Image (cartoon, rainbow, N blue to C red; front, side):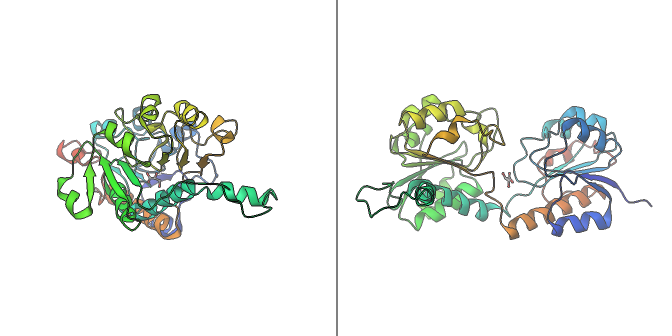
Amino acid sequence: MANPRVFVTRIIPDAGLKVVLEQCDAEVWPEELPPPYEVLLQKVKGCDGLLSLLTDRINPQLMDAAPHLRVISQMAVGFDNVDAKAATERGIPVGNTPGVLTDTTADFAFTLLMAAARRVVEGMDYVRAGKWKTWGPTLLLGQDIHHATLGLIGFGRIGQGMARRASGFDMRVLYYDVYRREDLEKSMGVVYADLDTLLRESDFVSLHTDLNPQTRHIINDDAFAKMKPSAILINSARGPIVDPDALYRALRDGKIAGAGLDVTEPEPLPASSPLLSLPNCLIVPHIASSSVKTRGRMAEMAASNLIAGLRGERLPYCANPEVYERGNLRGG
Ligand code: DGY
């Protein structure tokens, strides 16, 4: 029997790619930039499986253009780029990669917090520019991390990872989530707060929610108006959770002290973005999960989801498990 046909939308780490190439008739998009939507539409036409990244728009039109497509495996935990509801309606399981990137992402969110609070990048720029003439009593004053209040918006795996890291710095941790986790409050020493209280009382506000219609631009002018002028915003979740125009105004006008962003709206952030003109805005290119080990494990998980879907087996990590209750699996 011929191997199933699949399209892989970028070169992924070998740990996953090798498995896909061994078991499938695979075409791998070789470019640094993602395939344009129209190209992707053509590429998936005869495919049984698709291994996608968060930069690919996977919508109903694309699913309909590929009548044999019976699995979409995304190499990321977030899958807001995939219309999972449309996939469920069409009987297509969608895979993702939860769990493996939790600690790596929390490490990085905490790195951003520390770097923004202590103005690490500004310090490096200062040295590089040859401005370091002497020890200065008020040079690059930052915000203390120890004993400060950390407000976590979203208290899933990565939010909890942040709380664990914060306890080592004697921080007070508030969290807001649509699901209250009373079971964890005592053991982790965290306190539930409504969103307003969290925004008003936190020295650091760190975002760990998924992107959905309720969380889009949840950090907007109103939210910044409630935050402390000394507060720092950290976003390692999804860019559009923050209104970028409101963020610019808040940083420019001193409504908050700084921001550390791994994600932006849009991505990539154009070089002309006004955010890049602000010294108190630290921005890196969506690399929170980017460690050698973690990206390798994400690729492995994406490959195993893909292969399971092609074999008609339940995906080990399925983002739309309700697809199995409908009895309309494609190719099933
Ligand atoms: C994810 O997996 O959703 C991250 O944003 C990328 O690693």
